[in-house]
Length: 56
Image 1 (tube, rainbow, N blue to C red):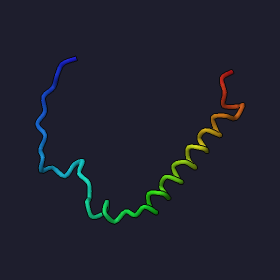
Image 2: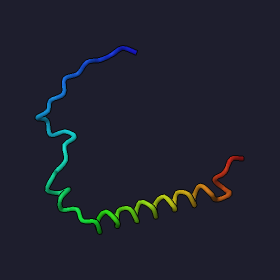
Image 3: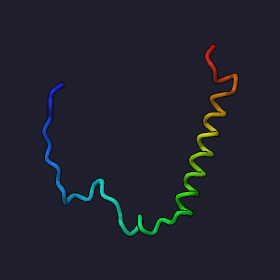
C-alpha cells in the first residue's frame, strides 16, 4: 500500500465541535443518552439470542 500525503487545513470547520452546544450539554442529557444507548444494546442482544436467529 502506498503512502499518501495530505495537507490538513486547520481553519476548516470539518470535524470541529460547537463549543456552545457542548457547554450547554448537562449531566442529565448525558445520562439520558447513556440510558437510551444501553436500552438499544439490550434490544439487539435479545434479538440475537432468539433461537430463530442462530446458526442452522
